[in-house]
Length: 481
Image 1 (cartoon, helix red, strand yellow):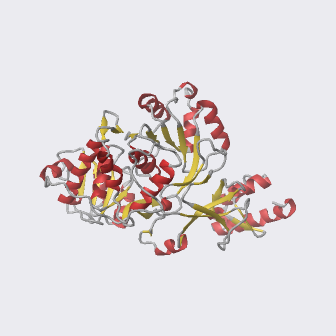
Image 2 (spheres, helix red, strand yellow):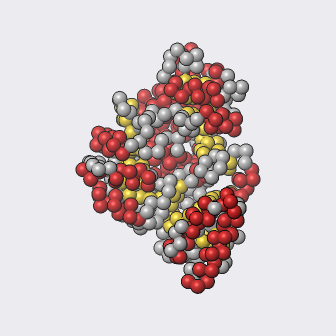
Image 3 (tube, one colour):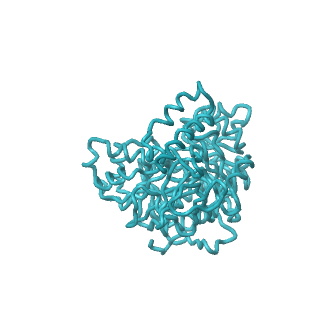
């Protein structure tokens, strides 16, 4: 268990009615005497908790100067540095809503987001400001921008701060269920949907997963491959260490294996926030085995299932525990995970304390262990729903439960295995099958691929699926899949 002294106080069984994340994760650090502790390791300097708090107050002043009020939305499109963190906490301090997004979006994607989000203000960096401003033509005036890093820009953050009132804006007494941060979901399967998450969600998972499961402590230093605008990193590389007085390594440039190895050897992080694709790339580097990862006490993996052979290869190379898990924007963060000393390779692990998962069929009925079905999850990190998408909200949120597109199975010991996406699932002889299972059971690895390539000539995705079902069904009857 983590050292509880100085940890941000939060009882998931009795959450406070009023909760503000800027107070919970940042102001609390100063109240317990951590003001001079290192909060952020940047490429050119280290930043203390007091400096982060002071900069966040400057951001709050600039936002007030620009007319931002409680519950209004601020689109944060900043690289991973002090300004992202300070802008996020400054926004939350006012009780405004942070919409965090990729600062490298192309112009058309920027415009779609701005039209969809309708932010009161956009915070961006001078290197990408032109893209966002051009995308916002006819939608937002230049006075609705704050630009970091270019003093000559009329929308310069520094100029606005200098003209703003020196009064420190008070921390808004937000309710635990007020919207706090919007996350993005579904970008790989259609237009991204904004997931409206509350102050409660972030405090809840930080306590249950970050502190109780991963045992974050004040001496932990985190380093993340995903950038902070991903919910996975917002938690693991910001909120989790801030909850206990730890620190985070931030770098604005794109991650490469060489860059990561250098950062690990230089900054000596204790927790690496990783994804399978980068794990593979790191291991494939010619110098991988010679690099020093001895500072790490564990690494996490999420975003896609971690193959068992990749897990074993990582462990054999570095002797660092690697914990695969699953989370969604709709539940904010990880709710299924392997644990230190309790890893079953090839699985997503077991449910995090405080959450409940179930495996159900297409009619919502629970399935026995070993059967493949849709994943249902509930817990106090569940989102309010999707912005401007009531139909999708109704089809994904059922009372306390969130039902996403993940197909899984669960064994008798509670370990959950990822089986694929529901969009690819097929009903064959009364049971769910996904391509992963079909390939393993029949040896026809190229069946779906071959038929999909002919889809444009021979029909829709649905028609392709029917032809796959026909062929698999014949094989199933003879081989008892």
